[in-house]
Image (cartoon, rainbow, N blue to C red):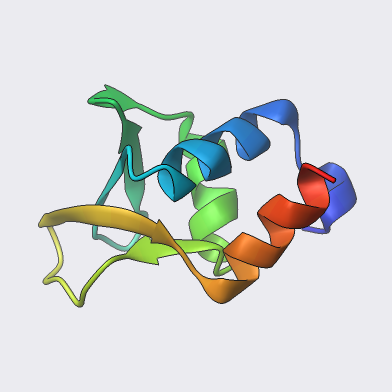
Length: 82
């Protein structure tokens, strides 16, 4: 998925995670929450699958950790908000 396919939903999720408001459930198909609410599953898969979001620390499968932007996620957010 290229940056041109990212939607306002992707951008909002990246912003929330950059603000420290996201949690990730580590699994084969990662799930994201923002402010305790589940995020769009497809958008979460896009962000995690493209290496833009991950857990703040190594976490075993099935556990929850704070979500953080990867360096690629930080660059992508900067491009989306420019």
